[in-house]
Length: 217
Image (cartoon, rainbow, N blue to C red; front, side):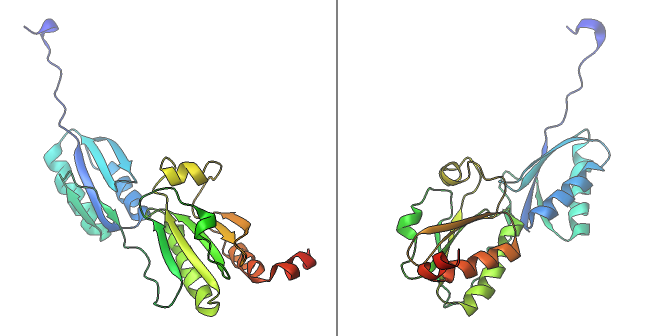
């Protein structure tokens, strides 16, 4: 028996949309376009799973329009899937450069044990959703091509709640985050955010032998 003579309208279940081989900025642009679809009440975007959950009043119409928007933006979307999406593939480094991944799933690492003796070691704390992190990758390719005495160690923190995130990103407000060790495996610098000029300056400084570096201070 219905009290008051009115039944509450049953809302359709949310529409999941997974983004495939995209940049985070493309996801955000698509989400804003989705908001313009008639009947859409709410959208949640999970940047770690690379997918959106769309709540609307007309599920069938939403599916069609979401697909049309993705086509207009030139991105691949999978509608009505439980799968996660994925960002574009990681940077491809030329052979011969000293590059290695210490973790790709957020485990904590031992920086001192991973510093390369006799080389400046750059520890890059990054995430797949961080577009500026790929800019740093391109900078490091150029720099390391000219300076083979530099080693690049990449740490995919995933997010701030991973073991690596909790261990190293407590007071770090943004990615990329770089920690630099000199040739003697001594930590000499840390840089938060995309600061190309500053990064290059600190790399040059770290490559100077310690007695000369100390004498210039």
